[in-house]
Image (cartoon, rainbow, N blue to C red; front, side, top):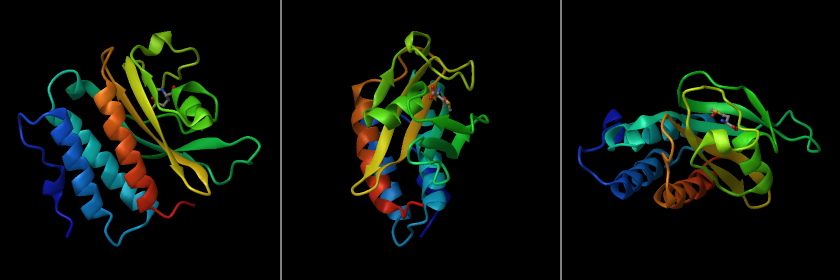
Length: 180
Ligand code: SME
């Protein structure tokens, strides 16, 4: 049963509790639903509202969402394409290896960037973003199918707690969807 209250996070909860709620609500929403657009849309909403409920710096998150592997890009030159998100309009396509997102996709490693100005090749979709975390979503037999991207309007917006929980969330999301 889908209810908008899934996006309601209690005031005063810790970041760990907020991420736990994101995972719990996502598992409920993904039950008997494997469409990737539907599930990533609800996942972006959960993340956005979780950050907005938290104290500084998490409440300064200004973009949270997904890029997916563009099925129309050639395997020799794979490309990410914008997926469901919350925040301002963003770059539509990103080649593997470019920017923070493309680096996470090509290396299959989380990119935790405390200061985007210090990341060579950072793609400034929105000049307001000061820090960023990008977590790859990989599926056995397919490799990278998507990435989670979260931007923050202040430096040092993310830490190892974000990395740990977003990597857990990536595993849940990866397993919950049929990917194109
Ligand atoms: N900054 C990202 C581009 C995507 S936007 O932040 C939404 C990058 O360098 O890959």
